[in-house]
Image 1 (cartoon, rainbow, N blue to C red):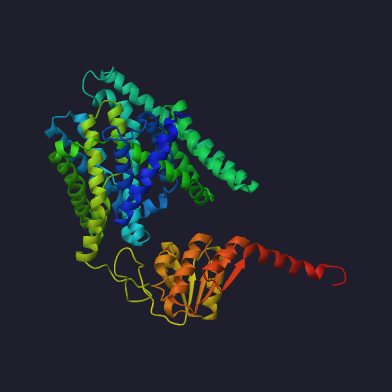
Image 2 (image 1 turned 180 degrees about the horizontal axis):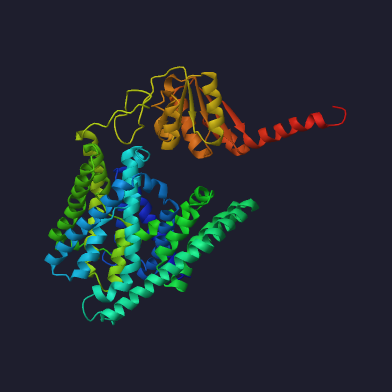
Length: 558
């Protein structure tokens, strides 16, 4: 007997199509976000075939917004912003104003009122956090000066958008076309805005005075129970609970509540673990958010509004990027830094969608405006890798780094940043808790060593010590580590599946290689040995042996 399950159908079909189209986008070296948006177009009401429940998709998208903003708050770093505040703050503000003016000017040409133009321009002024960070991470630039400027610039943009999301509902009567909202007098608008500000201040005070103590205490208490399941549930409860409470008790948006929850939690020593535990669900609902946004786009707009879409893309890719380039150059930074910042900002994403959705809901922005923003996002995200490719190939060369372990660079963006020339050496994959102990001992012994780790900060510190380190994941990094002429491979990573792929690839490249790996269970040990590991050290067995060895001398008669 068939069941009417629109929620399940929306989630299953939406995620399945997003997975397929996101994978295709990734293979084409385009952000998967494009695939997710196209999946939404495919299940939306403007294309034939299955049509997802738009009401349910919108509610799922709200959860996605909450978790996205919680993640933004978790990664908010005041120290990162302060380190580049001299350029990031004025640069981001001037660029936002410039892009908003361009957007408002284009809206005026379309015949839209000033309020619609301001919302439209603001939506075009802010870059996607996901796209920008991924582009920097692929090129191992997050910890460089250019990367810090780009991230600081992004933080300022995000903060401006958070303020816009707070102020827009209060200013809606002033910005919306006359007659579309009930309140029109200046005094009533001022009163509404004042009440909104007071509510935000009250919420901020509660979060700083109470939340700052209670939220970290709750997580520390849960962490001491030793239950990973409860810890994960606690993180999600805090994110969703604070967002919901902020909306119901203080009248502020879900987005602002979630952002503050993440920002408060970012001060806790458990913030990194909280980010890791919430990441899977955050990613899943973020995908549903992009799918729901895609459902709102009518592909016919590409034909009917081609000129308007091209003008919108021009503002995103050329207008605000040229403004960013001019600002960076005016502050005395090298041309390459300016071009990198310009390329990083030449796209729009999640905040643009949130702002556009709120603008349409408040009757400020016409539906056509949201369609132009969606089309502009899709086109600009598709073009963004091309801009970086052009910069890498034809732009001014990067300044030589003193911590470069070798002079030979990898051939393109998607390969490791260095290639070692060492032979008869040891390759250590992973420099975490276990890898750091093993690596330090090998360094102290003076062993020829190459370390592979996907964290830029860890690799930077190793290079400062004169250690040959490669910033990438091991599957990509084995050839750069010259695994074919290595003596030993040591795997110090917790992911058994990834370790198996590495063992297989290394064994094929070097049949005589000694491969030492770690495992947690008998099944993992068997799995790794089947792929070709020489020795597998099982953590639980070694711990038990160490306990027994420590216990033996204390036995009677020993």
